[in-house]
Amino acid sequence: MAAEGVKVPDAPKVLLLDRHPEEWKDEEMKGEEEGFDPYEMADEKDCLSKYNDDWTEKILAAAKWNDKKDMLQALFDDINTTRLKPTDTTSLIAALKKLLTDSNINVFHLSIKVTGLLSKGLRQNFREGAKQLASPLMKRFAEKRPQIISDISSTLAVFLVSCPFNELLESAIVSLSDKNPNVVKFSTKFIDEGVKQTYIDELTNIKNDIIPVLMGLTNHSDSEVRDAILESLGLLKGRLGETIVSSFLKDLNTQKMAKVNESAAKYEKTKYD
Image (cartoon, rainbow, N blue to C red; front, top):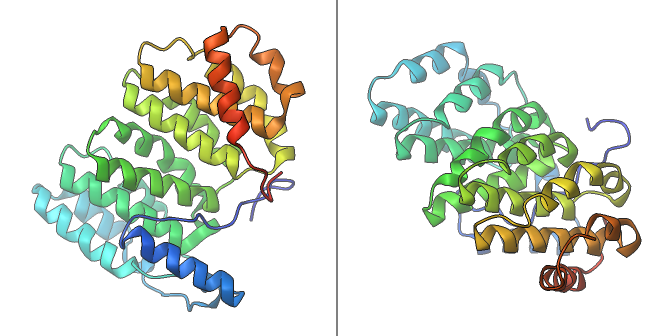
């Protein structure tokens, strides 16, 4: 259950983990048209109990990367379903935390996908998993392969259903101090998703945790990072309003302020406002 006073948003629009994005979009549109949530209608698949201490010890002890990959693939295939029956996933989460840092691309990429499916299938029952795995996922933004970036972003998007944004924010803020520009840029984009899907009262409560950190990056040496930061500030201005945000932005020059205002002008109100 979400903490008192904190609302967990609805399921995200797109998950790029096991099917083409258009399939996810079509499925959600169909569900909305028919007035039901496919997750709520689905039977729970009882399969997670087998991925216990023995399983996690075996995969972590495997000397060959392909053995790890085969075990992860079997797990992926098993949990690739709409809804999973909740069980104790402590050992599995701990193992994934290590596998996400594996040096082999096949292993850590499949670990990203598995993590996304667990969050999708367990929703709020994966709250602790989301909190523990957000940071190692964001560190993998250092990878430049588009599909890996896409799968990390999709997994983090589902985390926003499993866990309130304010509980994932610390991991994102830490990632903004990373030396790799890719990590900073895409962690900023995750913050954008969290900002969009957080109800306005809660966003107001956490604005002081976000805006000063973003302001500290407006002079970042990487132009793509600077653009992402200014766009994020604009989103916050669009959501929170001129009165609340203007005092934070007073040190921006005219050119940067124009980019912030351009981003703010693009924002359209949603149910979270």
